[in-house]
Structure formats: C-alpha cells, structure tokens
Length: 401
Ligand SMILES: Nc1ncnc2c1ncn2[C@@H]1O[C@H](COP(=O)(O)OP(=O)(O)OP(=O)(O)O)[C@@H](O)[C@H]1O
Ligand SMILES: CC(=O)N[C@H]1[C@@H]2OC[C@@H](O2)[C@@H](O)[C@@H]1O[C@H](C)C(=O)O
Image 1 (spheres, rainbow, N blue to C red):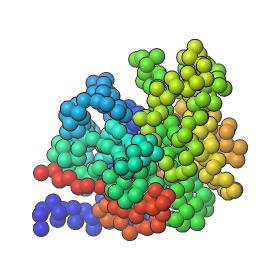
Image 2: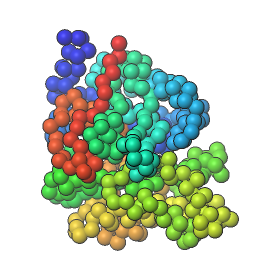
Image 3: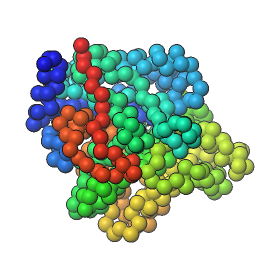
Image 4: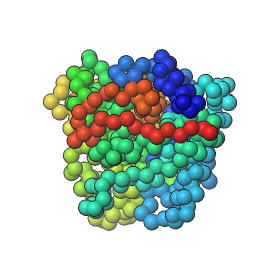
C-alpha cells in the first residue's frame, strides 16, 4: 500500500482527527482557518474548534483576484496563473498560522480547502440549454498540499453538480450533522457576500431538510463602499448606512428580479448581484441622483427584507423555530435589526456562538466536517436530490509529495 494511502487509512479510522477547515468566500476579505478536532461521523459528529483566525488578504491579492472574479470576460492566462498561485498562498498562510499556534504539521490529519470561487453559473443564470450547472473554484489543492506539507481535500463542489445539485449551498451537509436538534426547528442563516439558509426540522428527518441561497448578504454593499468610500472595504457597523434613509422606489426595483421569483433551492453570486445590478435598478426607478448614504441604507434594507422573507417562507406554519446566524453580516447592527423587524414571528435572532461555533468560523468548520465525511462517513442519506441535496461524498484528495 502506498504510504499516503496507509496514513490516510489510519486517519480515517481514528476516533479523533485534527482537521484544518479553510474558507475563502465571495467577500474576498481573507482566508478563514479553523483548526478543528473532529470525532465521530454522520449524526455522531462532534467538533471542537481549537483555534480560529482569519488571515486578511492584502490589496495585491484582492486586485489580482478581482481581475477575474465574477467576470464573464477576463484574461485566461490570468486565471491559469492564479490557480496555482492561490493554492500556494493558502498553503503558506496555513503553514505560518500553524507555526504561530505552535502546532506541528505532522499532527494535522488533513486540510479541507474550499478554494476561491471565481465564477458560479447555475442553469437558472446562464440559461443555455446545452449546458448544466457549473461553478469554478481555483487555488488548486495539489499546490496547497505541497506548500503546507499536509494532505489536502479540496474542490468539494464539482461532485455536488455531477450528482444533480448546483454546487451550493454545501453548508447543509454539515449543518444537518452538527446543528440538528430534536427540541426545536432550526434555521441556520449565513450572511457573507451572499446569504443562504438551511432549514433543520426537529423531526431530524433528512428528507425534510432543505437549503438555499437567498440573494445578497453584503456583496453589493461592499462593492459600493469600495467604489465610493475607498479605501474602506465595507461599512463597518453600518456607520454609513445609518446616516441615510430608505428609498422605497429603489428598494422595489432591487427586489424585482426573476431570481427572487424562483422557488427554493437556488443559488447565486456576485455574477448577478453587483454594481451593474444596482445601476439597472436605479435606472428603472429613476433614483440615480440619490446620496451615497441613502443608497447604502436602501441596500441594507434590500438584503434584510429578502433574508427576512426567506426566513418567513421557511418557518410558515411552524410555531417553534429558532434562527442562528453566522457570517460577517452578524456584525452589521442595521442588517440584523432590519431582518428582525421583518420577521414578526421571531423575537430574537441568535448567532451560532450559542451552539458552540464562532459565527465567523462556521463555514470553515463546515468544510472540516465535509472532509471528515469524505474520510470516515459517507453513510448519511438525505434522499432528496430534487431539493439540491444529493447523497454524495465530496472532495478530491491531494497528497503532499
Ligand atoms: N463590523 C462589521 N460591520 C458591518 N459589516 C461587517 C462587519 N464585519 C464583517 N462585515 C461584513 O461581512 C463581510 C465578510 O463576511 P464573510 O467573511 O462571512 O463573507 P464570505 O465568507 O467571504 O462570503 P460568502 O459566505 O458569501 O462566501 C464583510 O465583507 C462585511 O461586509
Ligand atoms: C459557489 C460559491 O462559492 N457559493 C458560496 C457563496 O457564499 C455563500 C453562498 O454563496 C453559498 O452558496 C456558497 O458557500 C457556502 C459555504 C455553501 O456552499 O454553503
């Protein structure tokens, strides 16, 4: 047996593994690194986040990635160069972070790497009959594995598409295993660049679980701040949005898009929700001369109202539903207030801290759980491919040498 296969086999049989979950999301703010101790598998999965950090991306990274990010047209040489470059960079970030934590790489069983999405393109978006759903993550895990010196499981989304899904949201797999409760129905809400949710019934019936993207979380707001309030990257604590007023005409135009008329499950990205989307809504509503403050306030309202609508839709007819939020959006007080104000049945929105997972670490932890399932699980059956949750094992394995 090859020594790497043997080592992986031993890792797979371990009661406890050390798995590093990595997430680099659509906000391009940084690489989330979660060192997780994962035990069990399937519904018996337990996770302890031993360490967590976000390594911020510098301007150079953002400039390079933005040349190709969510762009229909770009330089293919740039994409080809970025693929190994991001893999190596993520590997260096992991190696440095492990050194700063005093954790030897030999102790880590595997890295679970999401990579960097540069284009997401479900059928509902491209509408080309001859093609299916498609998504592209770069930052190849061979490069990551060789640089960090640790076996890496990556490229999780392709299998999901191959088996009938849209390549996202994948959170549902980990959400179901980690967050299911038999005492309350739960909605796990994540608000990064894009917002998504997972519904977990207290029956724990896997066939009744569902998950979907909702629309924008912070992506349009971030793009607007970066264009008009540079060098700011985002509206910290909604300081700018708090100074404006919601413009109802613009809000109505923003909410009027075919994506919102589609039923769950569906996925989207900054390919759709971007500054062009905003400009088109401003043109339709004749609101091009609004102040930057009013635009920002209206964008927060747009995200908040659509997120609340999705929560209300999910919890219709149910009395005991608790919402647990995660992602950078939990730090935006105006967004949180708007969501709550538009969910009459809710008295509070919790965050995942109260369930033992730091809301900023949640997506990275979910990829650690997916890697654990790839190694030791694979028995969980959802039985609802039509709901975008095919029964699959995800991830491709890259050895370090
Ligand atoms: N204090 C804060 N005030 C307002 N917004 C904040 C704050 N902290 C973070 N954010 C928002 O959260 C964003 C980052 O969120 P997160 O890291 O969850 O996104 P992501 O993982 O890149 O996205 P996705 O989940 O869509 O892939 C920032 O770009 C910013 O818009
Ligand atoms: C293609 C892609 O990278 N999608 C991301 C993005 O960020 C949030 C939302 O859009 C979600 O669908 C997904 O990420 C999370 C981790 C997921 O798959 O669950």
